[in-house]
Every structure is written in C-alpha cells, then in structure tokens.
Amino acid sequence: MKIKNICCIGAGYVGGPTMAVIAQKCPEINVTVVDINEKRIEAWNDEDVENIPIYEPGLSDVVSEARGRNLFFSTDVDAAIDQADMIFISVNTPTKTYGIGKGMAADLKYIELCARQIARVAKDDKIVVEKSTLPVRTAQALKNILDNTGNGVNYQILSNPEFLAEGTAVDDLMDPDRVLIGGDIDTEEGNEAVQALVDIYAHWIPEDKILTTNVWSSELSKLTANAFLAQRVSSINAMSELCEKTGADVSEVSKAVGMDSRIGSKFLKSSVGFGGSCFQKDILNLVYIAKSFGLNEVADYWHQVILMNDHQKKRFAANIVKTLFNTVSGKKIAFLGWAFKKDTNDTRESSAIYVADYLLNEQAEIVVYDPKVKKEQIYADLDYLNSRSEEENRQRVTVVNQPYEACQDAHAVAVLTEWDEFEGYDWQKIYDNMLKPAFLFDGRKLLDRKKKEEIGFEFYAIGS
Ligand SMILES: NC(=O)c1ccc[n+]([C@@H]2O[C@H](COP(=O)([O-])OP(=O)(O)OC[C@H]3O[C@@H](n4cnc5c(N)ncnc54)[C@H](O)[C@@H]3O)[C@@H](O)[C@H]2O)c1
Ligand SMILES: O=c1ccn([C@@H]2O[C@H](COP(=O)(O)OP(=O)(O)O[C@H]3O[C@H](CO)[C@@H](O)[C@H](O)[C@H]3O)[C@@H](O)[C@H]2O)c(=O)[nH]1
Image (cartoon, rainbow, N blue to C red; front, top):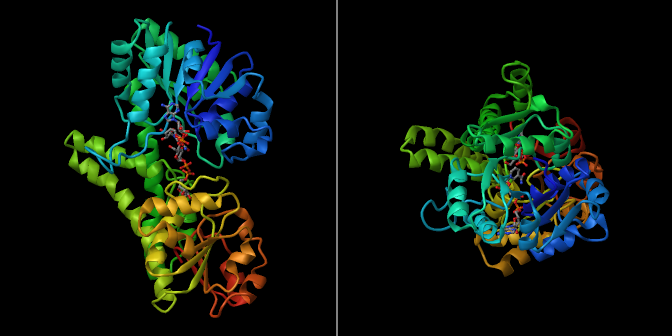
C-alpha cells in the first residue's frame, strides 16, 4: 500500500518537526499538519521562516525546503482527515488536573476528540497512527470509538511513539537510534499497515533500525524509555547531594561511572532537576497505570524518581537562601536561563519556574534573561502556579533582553539552563557590576569554577 496523503493532527513540538522531516524526505507524499490553535498555524505559515513557533536548531531550513511543496499547515482539520490515507495523532496528553487520576493519569480528552472527529469525517479506510505518548492499551479505546461511531470504514491503528528530544529534534529525526512501530501484526491487514509506515521511514532510515512489535509493547516501550532516562538523571542527582557532603565531585563520579560500558556515559549530567513536558508526565502516568493494576511496589519504585527530582529543585533554591545569609527578601537574583534545557524555547516543567517560585515566596526580586524564551511565557509559567497574584509576579519578576542588564546590581546570579553562550560572557564585567559578596549558583555545572573564584565570585555548583 502506497501512502499519498498524510494528515497530522497537532502542530506542536512533535507534530511540526516530525512532519517537516517526513515531508522533506518523502517529496512524493503530501503532508498536511493541522491544529485548532489558529495562532500556531499562522506562525507555521509565516513568510519569514525564522518566525515558526518552535525553535529547534536546523528546523527552519527543513521547513523552508518542504513548505508549500508537499508540506502544508492548516486549521481545516476535516479536509485534511478526509484527504489522508494515513493520520498521525500528535496532540498533547498532559497530566489530568481534575477528577479521577488527577495529578497522575494522562488526560486523553484531546486524543478522544481526534478519534471522534476522524470517525465523523472519514469516508474511506484509514491508517491511524498514535504519535502522542499514550498509556498502554489506548489503541483499544481508539479502535472502539472509531469502529462504533464511524461510517463503517476500516481502521488500522498503529503505535509509533516519538523519541526525539527537544533541542536536538532535527538531528534525532534524521538519524534516530530506532523507529518503533507497533501494529496488529497477527493479521494481514495489520501487517500491511505496519509495512506502509515502515516504507515511509525507510526513505531515510536503515531498515535494521526500524523495529516492529505488537501495539502494546510499542505503547509501553515509550513510557519505559522515558522512565529509564529520567531515572538516570535522578540517580546522578541523588549522588550530587552526597558529593556536596563528602568532597567528591559529581562530574568526576559520573565520568568514572559512565566509562563502564555496561552503564554508559549519556544522561549522567547532574542538574537542578529534569524538566520538560515529558518525563514527569510520563512517569506519573506509568505510576498510575501500575497502581491501577494493584502493583503498588512497582508504582512506588518509579514514583521515587519524581520525588528525587522535586527535592533537587527545592534544595537548589533553599541553598540560595541559606547562602545569602538566610534571607533573600528584597534581594535581586539574576536568572540566566528559563527554558528546561538549551536550544529550545520550551519552558514546560522547567526547573527555573519552581526555583523562581520558591525564591518569590521568600520575597526575592528576580530578573530573568533567556536567549529564546519570550517575556509573556515567563509570566504565564509563574501565573499558572497560582502562588500569588498576576500583578505581584509582574512587580517582582523582570524579564530583560540582555544578560549584563540582568546581572547589574544583583546579589546573586543563578544559572538555570545550560545555554552555551553563558560561559562565554565577560564574567569580570558581571562581577564588577554586582553587589558584594557576589554569589554565583551554577545549577547546570556549566561554568568553570576556578576562573570564577579567581575573579572573586562566591561560587556554588550542584554536586561539588
Ligand atoms: N515535546 C516532546 O519533546 C515530545 C517528544 C516525544 C513525544 N511527545 C509526545 O507527543 C505529544 C505531543 O507533544 P507536543 O510537545 O508536540 O505537544 P504540544 O502541546 O506542543 O502540541 C500539541 C498540539 O495539539 C493541538 N491539539 C490538541 N487537540 C487538538 C485537536 N482536537 N485537533 C487539532 N489540534 C489539537 C494543540 O493545539 C497543540 O498545538 C504528547 O503526547 C507528548 O507526550 C512529546
Ligand atoms: O544528563 C542529563 C540529561 C538531561 N537532563 C535534563 O532532563 C530534562 C529532559 O531532557 P531531554 O531528555 O534531553 O529532553 P526532552 O525533550 O524532555 O526529551 C525526553 O522526553 C521526550 C518526550 O517523551 C522523549 O522523546 C526523549 O527521548 C526524551 O529524552 C532536561 O531538563 C535536561 O536538562 C539532565 O539534567 N541531565
């Protein structure tokens, strides 16, 4: 079966980059990315490709090559569903904020809406691909909705979880460690659908990296991969606190440990805690699934990864207060970085938000500089926590476009994101313009301690 038209519902951090790369690599397939968010679609269609809504290194080049040729962004969801042979669902699946499973389970309302819309519109057979990260066995629910509310057409449901990391999305999509496709591999129709998706990826990915499994293994592998990755960060962060007490240095420990080929060197960088839209949400979802099967020990085991992460953010903030003579009230703290990691404008679950909230509760004044995050986003992140009034957030937090301005007259500077440019700043100039003693807190182990101490900074870095 040859796919001619693809529709992707959801033009976010996954739908946008993933479809741009598929369109670039498969010029004979028309790819239409649709979203109900008009502003987002408008930005994807902006004449100036630098204004697309998602910052990812290399993404604007891919979009400008394919956009208008075989890559389209639209708000006409029905038309795109109608024309497509294959429909990717790439909508958000956040943690539930209400009702049963509040604070733990994945909220599947957007997924269900997509399924109902597909069922209503589709007039011929479709392959529906789960691209969003979903609880294991969601495909069953999708199939039920499609079969029971549809127009009698046949659906094949595939699971094709996305493993890209933000900040490296384009590289990850061009050269992934693997592509995972789950389908109904016990039937001929199921195999045909799986093969149709394999054929798309095979345009640029070696077939030995394209893994096919049953649907449930595929769905669960995505949650498992994120749980393992986040667990490594929490494990090294747990060691960072012990390092600080014992004179060990967590960078040295992680290098020594990571050189064991059985352990490996990646994802052992201690930090002010992991952020991002995925790890916390997906582990909470895993914990909820385990609990719902009565597997309490399994649930508690994974939950500890989150608790450790909460502790890491809190202790970084508490250490700032303690070091600044037990009070930050009225003191100016400069934040370098707000995004949850470098090379992205995404701030979802960024540790910076929680560190700021803690310090604001201690009546600090915060000035933020981030190379890619917009002012409105920073205020929206703080307002979302509902810790204080929106007016107070705007009074006490200032957002500037220049790092030296952020650090001017500050009592302390805190590095919250590992943007490359931070180490290259004129730190002598920053020191000269700060109040003394000038405190520097490195939450990312990015800065050279020796050089900063030579300048005169009182320097604190996670894990040493
Ligand atoms: N962000 C990542 O790095 C990443 C990586 C791998 C997997 N995932 C998973 O991919 C999924 C999407 O994540 P994201 O970061 O792209 O989310 P996102 O919030 O950036 O994008 C989702 C988009 O879906 C749109 N949408 C929601 N309901 C819709 C509907 N009914 N019709 C049309 N559009 C609708 C929203 O308006 C939004 O623009 C999630 O399940 C996430 O867990 C994310
Ligand atoms: O050694 C490390 C590695 C990461 N982090 C932090 O962990 C968070 C997550 O980083 P990363 O995993 O690189 O970014 P994400 O975009 O959240 O990607 C994760 O989540 C995605 C969504 O499910 C998956 O697709 C990816 O495979 C998975 O890496 C960030 O705050 C990082 O700063 C560390 O503190 N130390």
